[in-house]
Structure formats: structure tokens, C-alpha cells
Image (cartoon, rainbow, N blue to C red):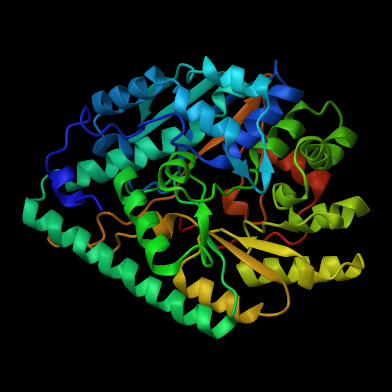
Length: 438
């Protein structure tokens, strides 16, 4: 394993660029990009950075020159022949050649589009405008750049000894979690965990270290893979992923009437099923409210493999799905619930025990796996590296505003007037506010 403290101490961005490859992104972005190119090749979409942790003033922490250098470096990257061969020949979710020759030909010449960067009230306003099939790929890279630059700025004044202690503290925290996972596996029998932590990772090297540690300590039976495509290729582990709110947000923005708006979440699923088979059919029901989605879903949606509840408390969200499957005459024990919203070791333990033998559970462990440095800084503010809640969301498509309601109103995005219109159309049943931590 790499000596991270030494690499950080000797850091220059030319030695360790944050984005090392266009493959340094999440599996779901590639799966969605292929769908976008097939069904919506001419749609334009704009994405924007949003730091929900307003107390952390990113524009006062991250140097603008360094941010531009990292963004420009990411734009200079192209897929290598080795990466394209891996994408063409690797098996994903048990399926060979999941990416078509047409899509791979598109990737051969792909580059990230341009960006706009300004400052306002201590925050960066970072946007990406252009064809949806191109701008979509900025989401993961831009967030990884922002999070790692913040970490680098915070660590810049630490000595080599202090950096050694910092990473020793973080490794000790990780090891305690791993030991608890081993005991949990013995208790519940089946435990499936994958890494969903690319977007808000502490840094690439730390994410890589965590993947190696999880693989060595837990084995493939428990640690099932990573969303990060580069690490999956480099480490020989499974690439894991589902789909994101971006799809229903854009489909809804393109709707011309309220009737089309109501149907848009299910049109996403229809298009997804035209490309991907049962192993990748995981519904994401909360974009415009889970209660409305489930109440109006066509019967065939209940035949999908499972669901990912994303903005309710995990036990509440899981129970809602179990009840829905029962009402639809499906056996919940044969279904898969993927829990990924702010999960950490405590909530993993609680939900694994709660749902044991009732439904299959998989965990997409994100920020608290790849960026848990709370309390690790040896001098000064011990929580200076505590993770923040920063997102990069689509804000418009073909010039029309994009909206996300969420089951948690604090996660709602879009112009206020459009949020209110969507709430009139979809209702607000089951929506409840709770703190957004990551």
C-alpha cells in the first residue's frame, strides 16, 4: 500500500493530479451516459455545484488558480486504449459487452466540456453547460476535485509527523469499522457492502487504500466492489452502480404537460429496461416523492430486482418498500434494497439486524467510507477535515428548469416556483424534513 502521508507531504498537483483518468468516475455515469446518447443525443443540460454546508466557505479555502488547473487538467484527459479495451471486454453485472461499439467509439474521442467558474459570498459557482451526454460526466470529477482540494488546503500546514498521525488516526477508525463488520457478518449471516464514495472522497490515494483494506480484510463475499471504474480495473474488483436522480429530473424537465410530468419517472424505467437487464433494474423512487411513485407505478415496476431508498431514514424507507411489494403480491425476501444515503457503521449494523431474513440488503457506503476524518487532525480543530455536503446537480435541460423534490425537503433543488408546481402535481405525502449531514 502507498505511503499516503509522504505523498501528501511532497505534494504538487503535477505529481498527483486529482483526476488521473476519465475512468476515475462511477459506473452509473457510464450506464446513464450510454442511455442518454441512445435516447436523447441532442438534449442540452447544465449542471451546477452546490455546497449545502454553507458554513464552509469553499472559495476562501480553495485557491482559484489551483481549482482551474485541476479542472483544466481533467479536460485534457482522454480514454486510453487500455481503458477502452477494458470497457469493451469486462463483464459488468454478469453481462458481457454491456457497452455497445457505438458508445465505445463515442468515448474514444470524448473530452469533458468547458466550464464557467465565478465566486459569490464565499462559495464557488461552478457550472457545466452543453450536450447532456457530455456535461453529465462532470458530476463525479468536479466533486472529487472540490473535496480533495479542500482536504489539501486544510493539510497544507501540517508537518510530516502530523500527517503521519492524521492518517494513522484515520486508518485506526477504518480498522474499528472493519472489525465491527466482521462481527456483524457472523451475526446476520449475509452482509454485502460496496464503495459508493468517489464523489466526496478525501482523495484518490485514500479511496484506493480503503478499497485495498476492505478487500484484504473482508474478502469478496462481503466487500462486493466499488463504483469507481478506474479502481475496479486497477484492483480487479467488481464495478458496482445503479442510476441517479439526474434521469427523472431531466425527463421531467422535458415534459410539456402535467400529464407528461406525472409519467416521466416511469418513462425513465422503460428506457432503462430497453438497454439493461434484470441485474441492473433497481428503482430510485424518491426523486418526486416515494409515496407518489409507488402509489402510481405500473405493476411491472414491482418485478424489478429491487430499489434504492435515498432520502428517508433507512428503516422507514425499507419498510415502505416491503409493504409495497407485499401489496403488489411480490415476495420481499426475494427483493434487494440498496441503502446508500449517509450510511455509516452504526446505521449499517442497525439496518442489517432489523431486516435480517425479511429482504435482501446491500450497502452503498459512500462519504463515511472514503472521507471519515472527523476527529483525526492532531493539532488545532480535530474536525477540520469533517466531510461536507456538496453536490453537483442538473439545473436545466433544453432551457427548462430541472427539479428534485426528494422525500427530505431540505434536499429539494430547483427554482422555488417550479418546486411548488411539482409539489402540486406530485403531492407531498410522505415527505419529512431531517438533517442532511453528507
